[in-house]
Image (tube, rainbow, N blue to C red; front, side, top):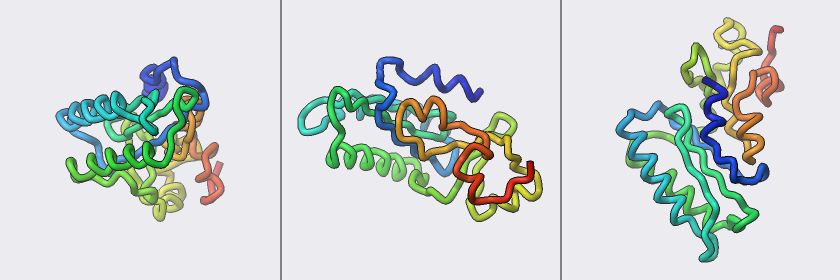
Amino acid sequence: MTENYKELIPAGFAADSRVWVYQSSRLFMLSEALHIEDLLNNFVANWNSHGAPVKGYGNLFFGQFIVLMADERATGVSGCSTDSSVRLIKQIEELFKVNMFDRTTLAFLLKDKVQMLPLAQLQYAIDNSFITPDTIYFNNLVQTKDELENKWLVPVKESWLAKRVTLSM
């Protein structure tokens, strides 16, 4: 399951293409996912920076993560074009009554399902073996296509979380 998402990332984008990952507070229903796909496709088709089209990509991964990508080798993404992407995400929040900007809730892959956990409960989850050093963590702080492909889904022990908690190996 974890490797399949890479097949959806377009090959024609530079490795240093900018990436933004937005995590929903819940899994989207199929009808919502289809609506989001339309919104993303429409946004990317019309994404501009200072009047120049942005080579962009948008997709919903695992039914819960919206990924936007811009290949800045073609057109740089400035404040206004970034703001337009944030407006899209806020529109999605409002339409579907979800939170897309909560950075204190973490996502893990447990038994092939995305499971959410508040950061404040992480040590408890580790101490009680709900989360192990090898549990896959969604590192939504990735910033490039290369990082999305290689550092988005990582074991907890290889993530920034390892410095925040005590892991028993």
